[in-house]
Length: 194
Image (tube, rainbow, N blue to C red; front, side, top):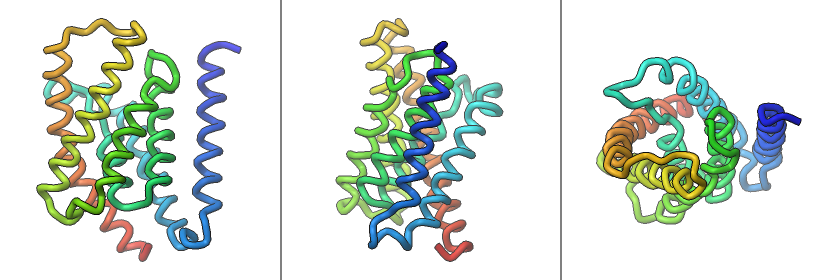
C-alpha cells in the first residue's frame, strides 16, 4: 500500500471514529448531537477553505491556519473529550495534506485544545479580549509544537527567527479568527436553535 493510500485509509478510519463519537454520545450529551455535527461541518468547511483557496493566496506572506482557532472554540464551548476528539481529527486533517508524517501534528493539537479545555472555568468566554488572547495563544502553542515536531523528526530545517516571525503573524490572525468564529458559530447555533 502506497503512502497516499495509507493516509487515505487512516483518514477514513479516524473520520468514521469521529462520526461514531458524535453519533453515540452519553445520555447527558444527546442534546449536543446537532451542535457536534455543526462543529464537524465547520471543521470540514474550514479545512477545505484552508487547503484550496487560502493555500493559493497567502495573506501578508503567510498561509492562514484556520483550524487552531476552531479548536479553541470547541475547547471553550464543549467538554474535554469532545475537545480531544476534535484535536485528533483536526491534526489528522492537517497531516493528510502535509508533506510530513501522518500524526506529527497530533500532540500539538491535543495539548493546545486540552490546555484551554482545562482552564475554561477561569476564562470569561464572552469577552472579546479573552477570545483574541486565547486564539493568539492556542495558535502559538499548536504552531510552535508543530515546528518542534518537524525539527525533531528531521523533516524541516527552518531558521528559528524566520519561524518565530511566521508563527507570530499566524497567531495574530488566529486571534482575530477566533473572535470571528465565536460570533459566527454562536450565531449559527442560535439560528438553528441548538
